[in-house]
Image (cartoon, rainbow, N blue to C red; front, side):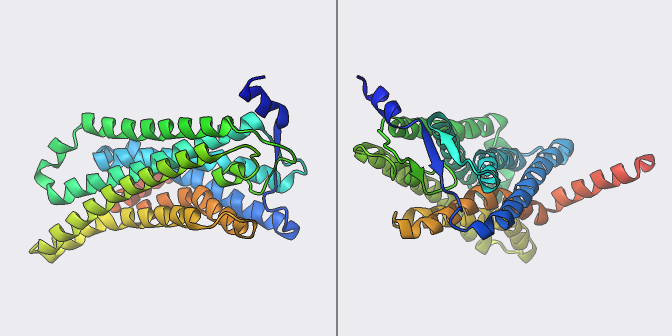
Length: 316
């Protein structure tokens, strides 16, 4: 009997606890998450459309922002529909295959987004520190390579981690104390030696987190030094305003992920893990379009023009 058949014969379905410990919160949580998810989809699709229709926004920065919006739509769509379902349906089961698929995609999109934010920090570094060479350095080819690289790395890490989870044996009762197949929650229901999987997760988490943070911090240290040396205060404000929205997005994203991995994995801390996971899978994708569009006059101007042309078509 192969190892794989063993694990399949133990468990074919997991039960997601979600927030069922708080029955009185089910309906309010459903409405909150549904509202956030709707805003996320509209906001991120809106950003993609706005960038597409305004030729002025066909620059490397907005090319990366399009991909960030696309990633936000993808990774909020991995957990949220299932989360909404288990808040209203009695049956909270998820098949083994569905669970592994969910884990694969959330892992891919989160790691890809982590590096997409680092790529955007590098883009801001080139824009502020080498403005005259910006279009030469950030060529179309380099932008495509950087984006492809982030997706490839996210996918590769995810394949390794999902394979390591799939090789474990899971025994009944396979109750996952979470609303989705988040790594620590899945590992906790395994009844075989998970040390290889945990070492792989530890190495990939540390490598991805430290590399992306290092690129981001190095870019911003140089940006700040360059801005400080600028003689005109107007240039200083303009240069920094392009960075503040990006810095806000990075701080929220990395802050929540670091919080998630610093929390000890015990039953008492599972509520905190669930809340932190909800924040980075449901809240962050909603915040990104708000952060970028509210602080960006080109985006606001395009939105204004689009609304005006829809309301007054005869004037266009």
